[in-house]
Image 1 (cartoon, rainbow, N blue to C red):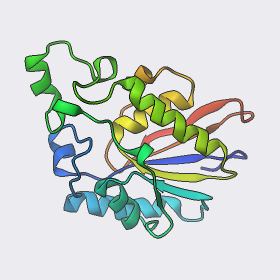
Image 2: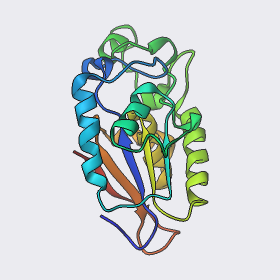
Image 3: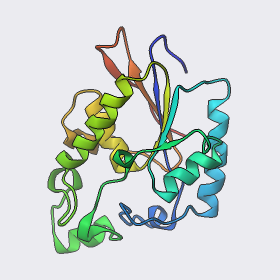
Length: 193
């Protein structure tokens, strides 16, 4: 999986009750399900033989527990910029429920009342990217779906709304890096189980 250039390994947290039911989980701090915990332990197998200059995690319980169960809890630095999208009044609500009251709503285009817009999340993603470019080596990140989707879009120079085109399953692994040199950011692998 490795490259001559630094690679950023992205892990979406394991399953929670809300992710399993499609409820938007931004700042509500809920635990992993038993299935989510098991998937987090399996994540560790993907990193055998790899070294990381840094390990970063969202401060959310679900992301940090995934990190810890994967064997990186002692090394991880919690970064608030890695938090999931703030869904405002849509916290805990499914997309189907939102659409019943607001037909045509799209998260990446419309954002969330009393929460964040895609641009807001993009500012956080850009800050993470700036920090990553200062690290000489591979970095492992544990976070949540919509944040990581915006991160991927910004990594390759797309507008934040471009994150709508990247889907992430729970406990999935994605890798971003570079192609020919450090001026060519690419997505090397996406949404692997």
